[in-house]
Image 1 (cartoon, rainbow, N blue to C red):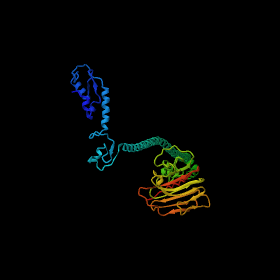
Image 2: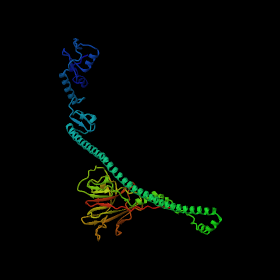
Image 3: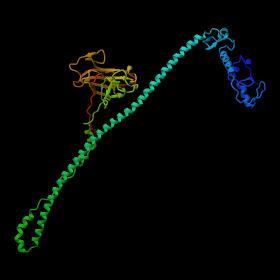
Image 4: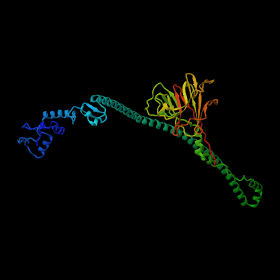
Length: 455
């Protein structure tokens, strides 16, 4: 049952069995398979010399294990067919071969390279792949860090948005409270005035009723008196009874005018709210703003600052341009006015494309830089207005695909195109703003108009 190493020098399978041999006190060695049988059968004797032992786990034969490992390594480098060292590599079969194998029919016409050169080439190729994997891992780490930044920034945005919502609704509540109090004061004032008038009317009626009651009583007493007394006072009594006061009349409009106070109340309050509201057809998108741009709380003005804002590098954000986009335009006609004021470096217009790839976006802008104005294309080039432009009006009609720039204060058209380029149906067009100056670019509000329609 015991195996001897010298009987299996050319057998890799047997050598593998001898990788963990044990040594018995009798100096005989066992392979792993024999040792397992030795334990399973419960025998405690050497299978070679039959000498008995009390050991259950004999010590490992380290010397024999080392010899086996060396022979295994050596056998792995040898050709199993020709017992020659494997020094060549067949590129067609992608396998190691010896110099005898190259002459075999199976490798005729194949590309045979020295094994060391193939190893070197593969090593370099694997190194390049490893480098790409490390770079890709770095990309994942960077993306994960950016996602963490965005997750934190989302909380910051939520707090800002909540604060703005509460502030706006507080202003609405304050406005409504003021209007409510004014309405209640008006109702109570009318109630007080008309109650006072009604009390005066009642007091006057009471006085007239008292005088009339006295007249009736005195007349009744005269009618009950004797004939002589009756005749003496008849003329006076008759004149008094004939001079009766006019029939009392109720006061018109004595009640509260409910229609004035509650008629279309909500609509009238809503109509008055337009005085406190500002509507802008374009709102800036903070998620696209470059790191050096600062937007107002209501997202209607932008300035350049020489300090980078702490914002995440989300795909839609301009990283190298000092630019910000407005919300994408829907179908229909859009008009917005931009106050450029004292800003000495700005561009206003529209762009279309994917915000995630700003370098591929195209569009038209009116620009002012280094004291020179520039229109959207080379054909028109620069122009010199008589006075510095303060406002720029941008008009886009998505239905007829036209666009124009003008100066709203003078109604002078600067540039127009009657045909916007054809783009894929899913391409969006965005208002565009660019600045490198501390003075703000402001989107001017449009006065709201409340109208009614009869159907």
